[in-house]
Length: 531
Ligand SMILES: NC(=O)C1=CN([C@@H]2O[C@H](COP(=O)(O)OP(=O)(O)OC[C@H]3O[C@@H](n4cnc5c(N)ncnc54)[C@H](O)[C@@H]3O)[C@@H](O)[C@H]2O)C=CC1
Ligand SMILES: O=C(O)CCC(=O)C(=O)O
Image (cartoon, rainbow, N blue to C red):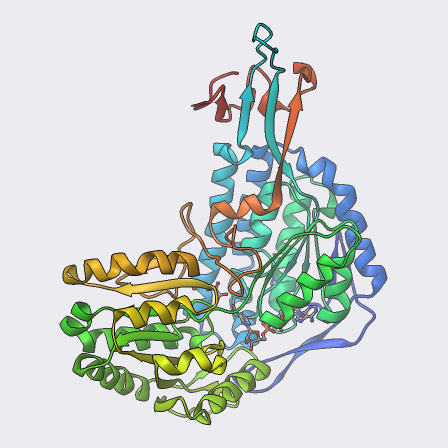
């Protein structure tokens, strides 16, 4: 498959040119506009994609887990088959370097394969069987069997900051397809060419696997037009999103206002507090300062796991940390940001902090020569200032962070308790910090989806145990994750079958267990035994 970009949308098996105004990607490294234009979709295009998805649903959701596993693996192969052309286009559209995008492609392909493995293992169905107890007194029990089925067609919004791993065939798409949900993607306007290429790989895999064409579509256009039209289409039953708080909340509001409200899984703002406990800070303040700046400036700071707040007790060890971090940050190179808009928003956020009397500017990174390069920024404030000044804890998307000086550990805990919900919370601790860490953990559990020790929050492992989620505004629904196999739960719902004849039961619940899936039978988990 060649990596040719045509500017077309993909609706089922067709490639069509939109009829609305054209979107052009911009190379943020040069400011150059990239051809071709991508004309946005019309209301008819949205309706066609949703009709096809609705038609595909009943066939697709009852494909075997093995068939869906093969499909996801075929998508992964097709993405790899795009070769270097995909990487070159993604570099031009995002300003991200080759190494990062090659890594991200590996993560995307690995994610699809991990869901294939989950499908073959079968536990995602969560089959539960409570066999009939006809002799039970005073009342007999019916035969009750539960499985999870796919929710329905899902809309996925591609994210600007991960043009591969959180976009057209990224985590939300992989988990929805694994669950048995057709997917309609609203591509991000920052990387339409990358989106088209990956979309063609998915479209090709749908065809190669003999699946209904409506299993996948890709549309372009504005959020307020195409995005809202998709979210409000009655055939759509759930939404996955990564982006701004404003965008995420607009989608939540639109989904709630529907005659039939639907869930929106939106990953939005997070500033990811890091706590440096006294013994760890004393033992390695300089090393922590350097490592912190490494995490802060990774990918020009354009990670929602970026460490935006650092808490520590006032004193000479914190001064050592601040000096080391400041020096590392001053030496850090400016980096091209994803879009001119994201760069402008970053500079505005930093300027606001610079003008804030509660924030002391500590250091800025090297100023870049390119048109949309962000240079890192570090600020210092007192814990007491945080409570009354909401601007200090607003996400500045990019490599900006605030060190929060605290009087004592109680103040650290009380200040963190006032923060909004987070994706991550990090503790740096040595053995002598154990009790302080123990006292902090319950507060961190209430705030964040992932708690890390002696590491840095950027870089999310894609695995079974991962939680990439958290209380609002980190996400709109703290009960799930957008990364890792648990993400499949977002797109499933339970159905119970009472006294349904064996021949009419779905295979996962039949007495002979023809799919060989693990099941909970009469309260006991059984590997793959018949029920
Ligand atoms: N926390 C995080 O992970 C991320 C945060 N951001 C934040 O978002 C800002 C803008 O970046 P974008 O990636 O463009 O995010 P965005 O939220 O503006 O856009 C993401 C997607 O949502 C759609 N959208 C936005 N507003 C909408 C609305 N009102 N109705 C319907 N659809 C809407 C857009 O068309 C796009 O497809 C950044 O400067 C940064 O502050 C961006 C990326 C990731
Ligand atoms: O840190 C990562 O690997 C993922 C971060 C993320 O989900 C995001 O920035 O949107």
